Image (cartoon, rainbow, N blue to C red; front, side):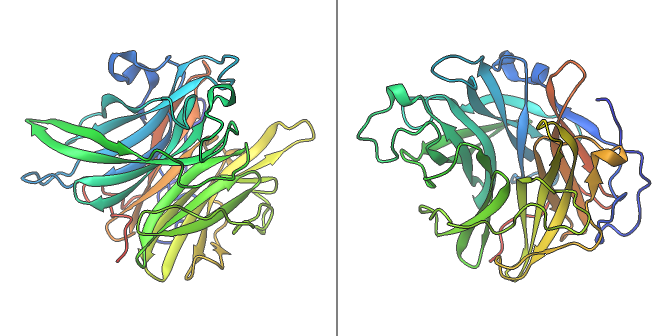
Length: 352
């Protein structure tokens, strides 16, 4: 990592002003993956939740992630990608359990990536992911069509018990069709929460952020217009792009959406990027937090690639899990937290 956060922590974590987040810690690298199941180049797109295991007062932290499996090819220009699961039990490091979903013959023959997690119950979670397929091997009669980017997929992650400090999880089903279709090539990073009897999904589609909802756990309608457009902030920290949204449900009428923002120069090179917060009471009208961006690379903060915000203690502490590229070009997972962050008391992002 080439830069470190050196801001002083403040006592006002709720305000989440710039400077509230402390020095980052690396939590997972490609070399940490079980049996080196990726190609060693990346771990990214963290999706994080807490799991209350019966008989243990120190809940594990679950973290799903993406990794590249094979390099680019004619069939899969971005390479093949899969989703893995790691967990932190007690005060130690994250333990990788290996892949949970990898490309198969359905709508994700090339890529299953950008996971998002939302609890169904204490031991079951819905995981959403971005899919990519090889159009040349697609069944022309497929319901989702043969576009390279068919949409968002979904599967169920189930806890299967423990053997000492070893926790066992499995995928019980993967939907055979995407739950969101008719997307553009440059979309991804779904973030899903449950509130008011519905699942609500935010996702990025360059250069804006879109929101859509689904009753129970069915399919989502593709929105015609974005909910948040780039360039709306007072300070211009997201002048050219909003991306990697992260939803938090505080109550059924109090929501936060954290989003990355970027500024490009005339050649398309990123010259500044950061992450800020937007608030809403109805998931339709959003107001940027008055403090402005929480992190910004032009201020010496990390240059975030993918990020998810996780709260604790009734939204009094915050942990930002994110991906950053090291000096060797390898993507690694990092965590920076506010003063009141408590890994033992992570909030469930599911409102009644």
